[in-house]
Length: 154
Image (cartoon, rainbow, N blue to C red; front, side, top):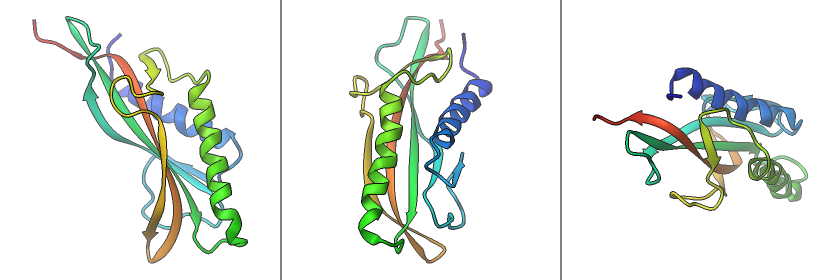
């Protein structure tokens, strides 16, 4: 099976719809927001990088498609002592699903949990300003190994 536009959209849809089913987020976007998210937790999913993987075959090259799943929460949410625990709870709920029986479709070999190809599944906290409003964020790096992504010239 070759990798195509439908496979890309299917992976994005599965990641975003799963995040929404957790009931933790007010919104889940399949793009980086251009305007500030709402007052509760929000989530956004996008493709961060695409690269070949070493474990490819002789006639086709598999790929590593790395998604970013960013969780947003207001920096001034009260009580402020709950901001980081809420972020961590949401991030670990997503990561637990990615570590378990998470299905991204027929072209996906696996989620690279431990970094066999490159970077592993991980989350990094930080801060982000959108339209002069500061957010506490947690970015999950979600590396996905895709079979038969590029045909090789023969």
